[in-house]
Image (cartoon, rainbow, N blue to C red; front, side, top):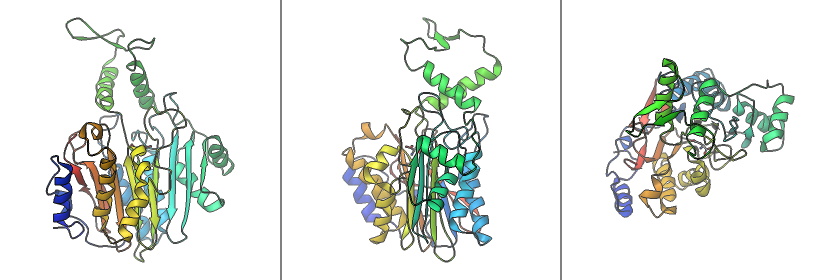
Length: 380
Ligand code: ASP
């Protein structure tokens, strides 16, 4: 049994919710031997628009560990890790290729925290810059501000020599178009598919084989509102900590909407004396409970990372009085590690919409692997 989570407590929590929460999560057995250096991140593993499987989290923690092993700073490590995912056009929830807002513009959010210097930097609603995490870092390093947003953040980045780029990939544009066309049957947009009276789908356009393949990928991807973000946390051999969170935010958001990811204390919090925590999933829910800060404070009061993260999930569920019909409308995940190098992840739903287990990526200095998150409820 994982020492991090007292089993009786966990059962009590499950029973109190009155629903089929698991009595024993497999995630609770396999983790949390303290080890330093250590890097964890969200899993970011799913099928990309090209039909291939993405392993963003594993790539991220592997890159970050290389830097830690070479003696690099924890902030350098986590930022270099997530840069791989920001640069990847096939991860449509982060950086280049991120899914756009309702006006079909990509808007990115990110924040960073550096434990040893106790400093933070953040940008939100940033357009046309591929690596918002690097801009967030510049806010930390080159200003006495913490957060810069929108047009100001873009101008700040350009003045620091960043290149203005078009971040919308063909596949993100096409997903947006499909979402837009299917939004309202009464407006003037699409859909490109029509149903006959017998329920058979026919196309009004002459679609190529590639377009047909893309349509079936899009249907899968759009079944639920697409989510994603990457959060990465690291502790080095000395026990110094840093973290970063970076995202294109909620797909099809109202322009200017900001989620939890760039908010210090929500999508990320680091306290070099205690630990670090971050989140992915429905940002509004994380903001309501100040997820990152809540988890670090839980750890300060003696909880292990898994228990601290699961407590944050329970607080979110409690806002809805554990009403499953309400909770089924979203996903939320937390990741945490402490100064000793213990780690954990917790999620509202054990199983993702694609049927895979909700997990997080870890590199313990020997190997990178995925670990199942502890969860409050098994399935949506
Ligand atoms: N947390 C991000 C946001 O709400 C999105 C996500 O992780 O899916 O902006």
